[in-house]
Length: 413
Image 1: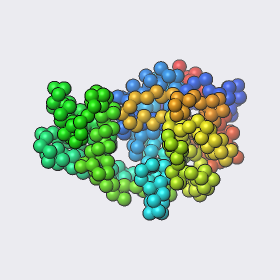
Image 2: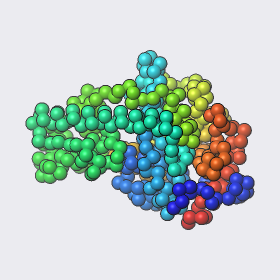
Image 3: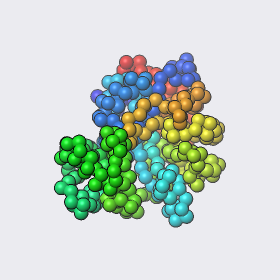
Image 4: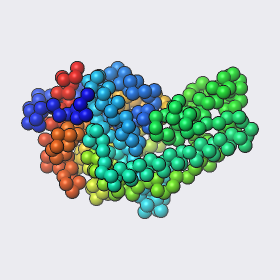
């Protein structure tokens, strides 16, 4: 496989001609945001990702792991083998200090000031200038130091309650994670190590009850995903015996994250929480005009939705508002929890997307696809040298991207 998977595609004008004859509504599924086992994922391996994608006719798919591009080569190889157009993305957690100090939640429902950002359409193979590469390495190191501390505290807790149970970073990397270990890996390691060392059903249940200081229902014990979520919540979250507060150096200021993303030829993107099941919004997102003004001032011209957590009417109003503002709008499913859910995009209560939403999300991934392609062949992407979106050229990017995706399908089917 060539390192540059876009070098042999037609010129932009030819791609635009191909796009003119395509329907506005895609005849395939799109999912621009999934996590893979290279961070933490519902998927057992990368092959699992593409088996599910093909089963559900997802033909445009975006990898979106935390802090790492380690999965990009594997993702690209399988995308080519399965004729699924790849989007190369990454996710970060930043900090807005003023909002934190004022108790304002941004797009983390539990931690004021904490701000998730995605990089969309990164150049593949991924690289950063040494300055930003060192910043990213430092961020990853800080997260791993915190994880190591959580493992130590968890082992201490097991010892305190008289359990001969030990988990280790080394074992987690061998058996569960890749190189990057996250909090959810610890929860999985606790479950796996417990059942491995105490396979008898009654003993297994007894040990879990001691760890969680409760009397677990049989349904919980038999549901691995539910059990891992409970272990994480009770053991590793604030107030739990394995909890370790993150160092502030684990979070870059949002403006520095935007610069890092741009250095990797990515498009900074704000992932939106939007409404919760009770219809509530975070303080930062409750006024969409204020949110828009902040994003523009921060050099962010893209937003991303995870529709399954939103009311369809609320989502549609939000999407139409930002589409009118000429934003890139994409959507995904995350798949960064133990639960295995479908990859196809639906809203809360499994409400299907209507054609206008499908069209807008198709436009969004087409712009990202065009940006990837153009930067890969040495042309200007969707952001100019100052980091401002080339909104006047937006329709050109949509056409190039649609033509590119269609050509990709024909070349690799």
